[in-house]
Length: 293
Ligand code: NAD
Image (cartoon, rainbow, N blue to C red; front, side, top):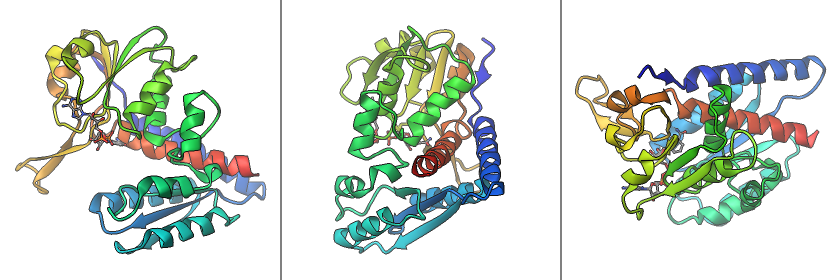
């Protein structure tokens, strides 16, 4: 089958250009720039890269941004105090705390300390609760990016069987909820599979749409997929590759080379969901800015 790529890189670039234009118009009319603050605790190399990418994306879009870097040994109370002071800072529209946090800090307590009106990661229980009952709120960036990608490619979702692989709070669970909501993109019949699901293959084979968010390279094989399926591969896994200078390369949860020919649409990794996640964070920050005006 001739498959088409769901090109997250190009779609995200288009969204980022739209945001940049909107910010230029705001500033030309005398408005201030949207502003994002990120808190990074410790030295996790992946977290450092993610935060640097977000900082660059903000600069490109014409946002002001600030990264507060705190040492690994920062105490929970000190972090909570930092969050409270940013909550009260009228110059800041959006606040994110890069996860994971060091083990001595209670992640849920930290997330709950963020002012929901600045919760542009959409992880606060109020944001998650509003999402669950379909109220307007900040959606978590990765699920939101997945929905936007499906929307921009006009992928039909109404009445489709959608199988979500993974049940994490940041990807699997919210994306399953969003795709089951009324309206577009939604109205799917969603099955959520996870590490305790028996016979995942059986569910996956029935799926018109598969969202793979497990974190196991090449988990989704060609015999698990029906002809014409739409596949969104969220996984980002590093595997050894001696042909690369770095010695590794990034792959998704789907065995792309073998699975893609069976699909109607599929995301590449990299260049699929990853760039959409950053674009969604910018969209949320612009939304927070507009809500506060
Ligand atoms: P997680 O580790 O929190 O959750 C993994 C989920 O997969 C769990 O719910 C678990 O039940 C399920 N699972 C594990 N083993 C399984 C198995 N053998 N069979 C079925 N289900 C199984 O991961 P996460 O944070 O949701 O991330 C998933 C993947 O997506 C990771 O590779 C991560 O790096 C990637 N990710 C990418 C983006 C992006 O922007 N592209 C954002 C977030 C996460």
